[in-house]
Length: 64
Ligand code: SF4
Image (cartoon, rainbow, N blue to C red):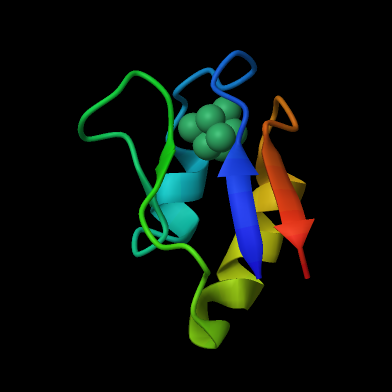
């Protein structure tokens, strides 16, 4: 799986980081950065949950 965050849509709420801290980080930017590309299989479920929970629909799965 490969995933991106649309930084123009992201509000920096931190929900994705809370659900998948191995994949998303707000440590360096006001928006969520993707830390691992491609996403290791063990984190895919947390990424899918993040996509569903993101209030701005800013997380986009670009490759299943
Ligand atoms: Fe940004 Fe969405 Fe993550 Fe919130 S859940 S920090 S809006 S990508």
